[in-house]
Amino acid sequence: MEQGESKNEKFKRIATKRVQNAISKIECIGNLSSSAYQYSQEEVDKIFSTLGQTLENTRKLFSPRQVVENKFEL
Image 1 (cartoon, rainbow, N blue to C red):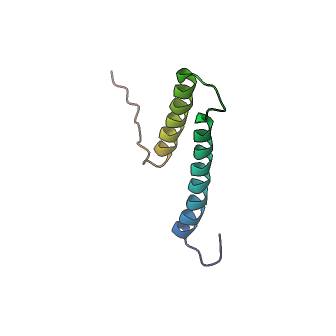
Image 2 (image 1 turned 45 degrees about the vertical axis):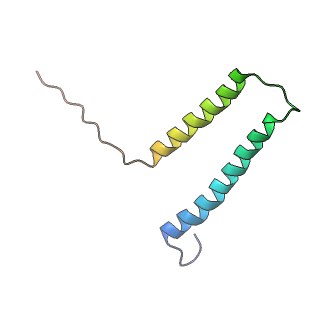
Image 3 (image 1 turned 135 degrees about the horizontal axis):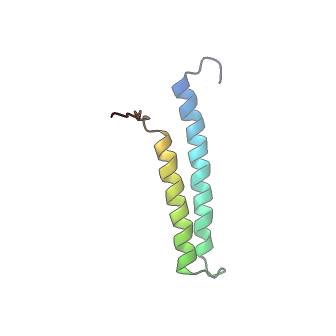
């Protein structure tokens, strides 16, 4: 953490870099749509399904955790 930097400032600084890197990598995946490559719709669907699931799993990490109480009663 840079001196005098708050936790939120650190979050914003690091998140900005990481999101920009992720966008760049996703754009590289888009380059695979060029006629230089051959692919099936099934392969494309698998790529986007995996990316979507990864994004959803990552989003859940930012959600408040819900406490699940295990109750048993006779």
